[in-house]
Image (cartoon, rainbow, N blue to C red; front, side, top):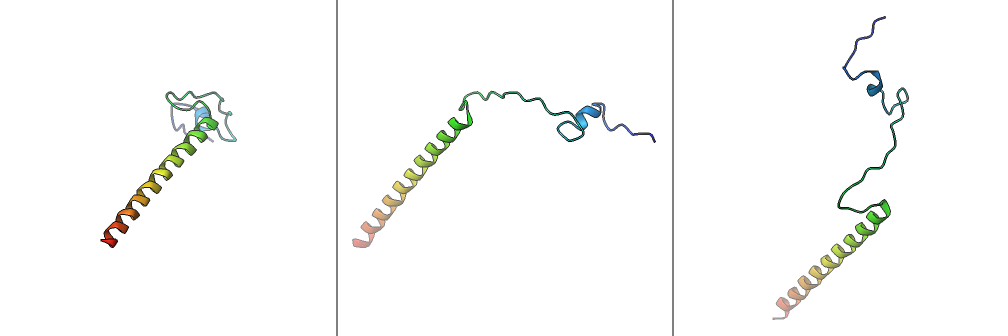
Length: 73
């Protein structure tokens, strides 16, 4: 039985990362300008979420205060 070739890259790339192919090589990926580790990213994300929540609470409180002022006058 003849096999039709699908691409010029060959068999290895078609099956790379699957059960039929080679395992992908593990290597570090360096991201510039951001946290160096997942843990650092988690800490940064939690801090940003806390700041956003605090800012939202401040806006909500000032909105309630302005509504109270309007109702009392």
